[in-house]
Image (tube, rainbow, N blue to C red):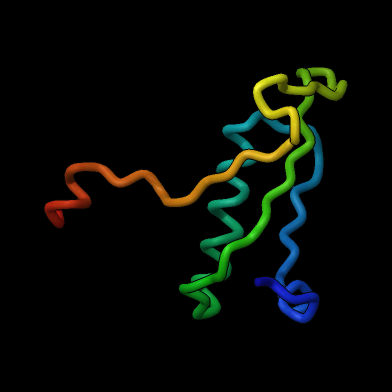
Length: 85
């Protein structure tokens, strides 16, 4: 179970502005690259909140996620990963 202290030790990565999902993905990768440059290679589970919008910045709600939660348990593994390629 995650305690309040765990949240206090977390790192907030703030992505500002209106961007495409691809741009946000690139920004997250850049943030993770900066962490690796500082010797950070592991992390506990975390939360990522994004404000979904249309191209004009107006909020959009996805009916597929009525609780506004998408749970990702594990990263995608390819056959190449399984065979060490």
